Image (cartoon, rainbow, N blue to C red; front, side, top):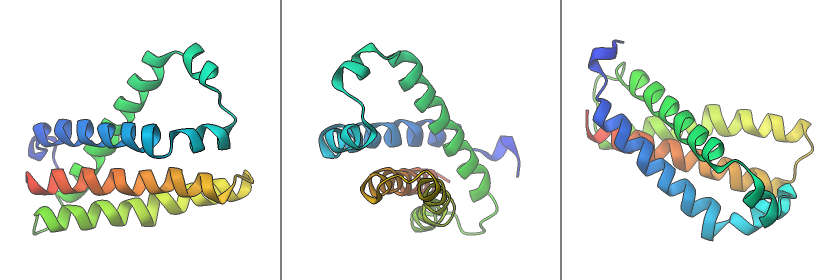
Length: 135
């Protein structure tokens, strides 16, 4: 695995795409339910540091995209389907399962887990799809 083999344009495009999907997921699709399950009001959101929240989320999504791009260098047949498969597998097998363990011990509701883990699986699928298509 080498840094020079990473398609940085794909990483940036994948990051932006996953960020947009997150905006839709936590906006019109599940935003109000997610807020209610977390006890977060509209006023709490308005009072928060949105630059820190969105900037941090974007940076962390970029880290995930970069890590997935590095991992995908090990696959002998990079392609759209491979990227989608690797991304979805990482999302399900590593991220959603780890998130589930934390949610179980934190006694968080299943509905909240499904919203958050569902997004994370979708996010990694999108990252993998774009990175795989551009390899």
